[in-house]
Length: 510
Image: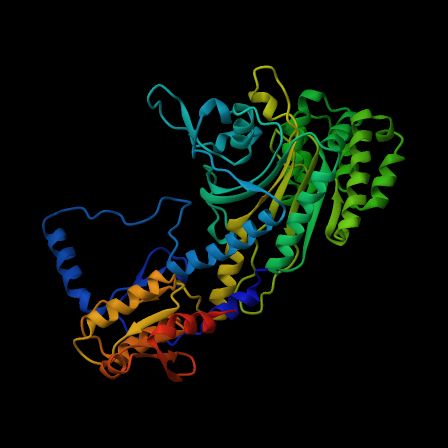
C-alpha cells in the first residue's frame, strides 16, 4: 500500500544544505525543480557567458518544450513509488505487461478520438510512412490485438503519450505524460470484467489516500437512448456526447447553448436532454429510469440500464458502492466507447499546508469499447474490451505539492551501506570490501577520493539517508573485522569479516 504516510516514513528529514552559490531556477516549478551552483564553479561559468556575449554569440535557450518537464531525482523517486503502487495493483489482478511503439501509423489513430483528434501530434512523411505520436494506450492496444489475432487478454501498460493540448502544469496537464492502463479483452459474461475495473480504481485511490473520492458511472447506451427519445438524430449522438462531457467544467446553460448553437439541436430537444443528464444516484435511480415511460420503451437504453443494475449488484458484492455514483452527465468524449463508462473524481483535498487549493480534476477514467478492435480487422471481427486509465500525472501533482509543503525530504537513492576508511592509504581496502558487498547483492557506495576524511564520509551518509557505514581502518584490517556503524544511532560494533554480509542483511530486514 502506498500512502502519503509511508512517504513520510520512508523519507528522512535531512539536515539543511550547506550555504551554496547563486540559485539557478530551471523553470518556475518550486523547490523540486531548483538546482544550486556551488560557489567554486561560478567563476568559470561567468567567464564563459561573458566571452560568448563579447563575441556576439547567441546563447541557446535552456528550457523544456511547452507542456513538458524534467524530473529531478526527488521527483523521479516519488514517481517511481507511485508507479510501483499502481503496477502492483494491476499485477494483483493478474494482468501481464505489454509495450507498443511510441510511433503509430497516422491512419491507426485518426478517426478514433472524436474532437480529440485535433490534439494528435502528426509527423512528416518518414520513409514512405505517415506517422503520429500515440495519443493514448487504448487504440495501440486494439491495434495490437487485431494485428496478432488475440481474442482474450488481460494486460497493463505504463508508458508516455502525447497530446497537443493547452498545458496546465499546476493541474498535472502536460503535452507529454504517462498513462497507466489496465484492460480486459475477450468475450465474458456481462459486467464481471467491468466491475473488476471499478474495483481496481477503488483499490488504487484508497491505497494512495488522496482524500475522499467518487467514481461516476454511466453507459453510452443509456445516453444514446436519452438522445433518441429526446429527438436527437443518430448522426448527432457522438457530437452531443462530446458536449455533454463538458458538464463537469461548465454549467448546463453553457452546454445547452453549445448544443443548440453549434451542434444544431432544437431548444426543445436540448431541454429534454437536460432533464435527464442532471440526474445522479444509485440503484434507486436505475429502477426509476427502468420505469420511465420513454426510456423503458427504448431497446438500447433498456439494455444499458439492465447492465447497469447488474453492475451495481456486483459492486455491492465487492463492497464499494459507497464510492459509486450513477451519473447521467458522464459522457466521456472519445468515440470508441460503446457501453459502461466511468470516471473517478477527487471531492476534497487537505489544504492545511498549501497556499492555494489544489484543483486537479478527474484522476482515473475508462469504459467499455467493444467495437474498436474490429475497426482494425479486415473482416470486422470484434473483440469486446473494457479498461481503465489511471491519471498518474494529476495524482503525482497532488503528492508532489503535499511533499513540498510538508518540508520532508525523500531519499533519491537506495544505497544501504557506505564503505568508509578513517586513515589514509586505504583505498584498496575500501575497493575490496565494496566489491564483496556488491557481489553479495548489497547496495553500497564509497566516496570517489583516495583519502577522504571520515567525518565527510559519515556526513554523506546522514545527508543522503544511508542507514549503515562499514568502516575498515588499519586496526580493523589487523583484527580481521569491520566496524559497522548505525548512522541514525551512531552506535558502532566490530563484526568479523566473514559474518559482515549476514549481519548487514539482518539489520536491513523490514
